[in-house]
Structures are given as structure tokens and as C-alpha cells.
Image (cartoon, rainbow, N blue to C red):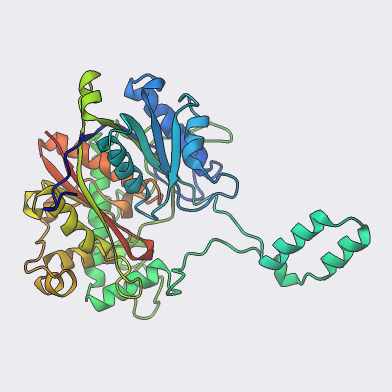
Length: 435
């Protein structure tokens, strides 16, 4: 960044195409597909739909959040399992829920530096295929068994194991530093910030209503591919299966709190569900896009990442990242035609919106004299958000960029702000621009 916070001179990164799978509830349509399978499906289809020859691509940046026990470099697998030339270099990224934002901004940086002309950036997640780990004593015993020479040695090793050593360990969902799950942290935010259950349920209702409306109006048809469902391939996943067209505020109000059963406000209805899916973007230098006669959906104008102590307000990262991204873009919140904020929990969205508008927060936390401002509800998550559409951790950022740029195009708008909160107290913000 230049001294005044404006982007340095360099080439502009254009998003020229994008695609995602339907986002489906974990354990449903995609339960037999791994994150790598889902990613390869979307990358293959995206390359075909982009109309670009496979040799036009020079890099792939791809991520997943839940580690796969068998694939450690999903980025490179996206090259090896698709029709891209083997010579396309690739790397893997992870930034929790902001993983495909990281992939996209990495691609934009490489383009700005002149190191890349045409990249694929995205992410895939299979919560259905989450790794189950062996306990440490069992893992150590298995290594020793592989080295044992005699039957007696093997018997001795096995005799040392206790029944509890055979209990598998699922992946941790708690913050290692605080011991709290995301939901427990969001519950704390709701209490500290005075976010009511009714306000959360209303936001969740709006998410479903708008997502259902967007599907019915055909707004997602071009950005969501159809996936034949294994193992029998006798039906096709064509739509997100979490969206509830018929939900009501009353129905949401009947759900019981999940994390704090007595005083809590967070339910399965006002939080994003566990989801499988993949999404990817084609990001290209403006010059290359022009030379190929491709019309960009829009440009990544500026971005920022921020972090705060996870013991405070774990999911408040957007309130720290957004002011910096807007400043780097030389724009204000009021200049945004759309705002898309990842809905991990309704409580987290409402907490961040509250911080955006708070003078006290701006002065105390950001050292700024003025708050960012109020977000017009009519501009926020206009086609639904992660509560209704689902949240495959590594795919959400790419979904948001594609969905927002396409909506900006429909409205003839010029600028949009995207924010994502992420585990570890991280926040991401991107300013998108359309000509």
C-alpha cells in the first residue's frame, strides 16, 4: 500500500468468471464426495464454462479448512485432477472461514506484481468427510506394530492398550486458546452487545426469504452447477438444500437454544449449518482480459485482514478489517451499493453492524474519530447469506465475491463491501468495483 493507503500502481485484478456447486447440508447429497472431489468438479466445469483454453491458466490457489487425512495439498490436486496442464503451479491456503477470500486476494496480489496473468482461486469443504483421528496411545501403538518383528512383540504392544485408547477423536471445534466453540463465543457476543433473540431470528428469516426469492427468480442459475449425486448417480443436486422457503419468524422463535440452554439466544435456526460444497473464481489481469475480449464481472479494488484477541469478541473481525479496506480503496461505507457480510451467526452479523455504527467503538477500538456508519438493510445480503445458503468453510468467500459482483451488475452498481469473520479472532474485508 502507498503511504496514503491507496493501492500501489500495478495491474488490476479482474474477476472474469466464477462457479460453485450447490451448498448442501453435511451428510446429505455430497456425503460420498471429498473436498478434493467437490473442488475438482467445480474447477473442471469452471474451466469449460470460462471458454478459456486450459493453457491460458498459470496458477491455482485453493483451500480447505478441515484437513483431509489423505490430501494435504488440495491446490495442486485441483491441477492434477482436472484438464489443466500439469505445468500449472499451485498452492494451498487456509484462513478458516475466510479461506477463499485469501485465495482470491493472493491471486490479485500475484497479478498486481506481474507474476500471474490468469489464476483460479477458490475452496472446497466436505464436513461429511471430516477426519477422525486415533487417540495418541493407539497411534503410537500402530507405529510400533509396523516395526515389530515377532508375534510376541506384537502381543506385548497390543496388551499395553486400554479400551479408552480405541475411542476415536473427532476434529476439534473449540478455539484452542479459549476452549470455547464458535457458538459459545457468539453467545457471549450476543449477551455483551445486547443482541436480542427476536432480532437474530428476524435476520435469519430474511436470509431464507431472500435466498428462496433469488433461487425462484433464477438469479443463481448461472453461478451454481448441477452435480450428479454418487454413488448411484440417480439424481442431481441442482439447488442449495438448506434454504427454507416456508420458514417464518414464529417457527424460528420455537427453536431451543443450542449452546446456553437456559439463557441462550443462538439456535440451529439463526446460525449457519454444517455444509458441503465448493466454489471457484477465474481472476485475470485487466490487460489479459481485454486482449481476450472477456468482460470482467468486476475488480478486486482493495482488501484488509485484521485480528483481535479471541477472548474478547471472537467474531468481531469485520469491524476491524472493513475500515482499513475502505480506506485503502479511498471510499466510504456510504459509497457502497451492496454490503455482503458472512452470516456465521445472526448474533455476529448484528454485533458487527452495531460496531460499524458505534462512535464509542470507533474511538475506543480503532482510534478513529468517526464510526464507519450504518448499513442500509436494503443493501445487506440481498440474495440471502450463509444462514440460508449454507457455509462450506473454504468455499464461502468465493461464493460471496461471485454472488455480489453478479448482483452489482444486475443493479448497475459500482462498489460493494464483503466481510467475513473467521476463527482465531480473524476478520477479512474486500472492496469490489465494477466499471
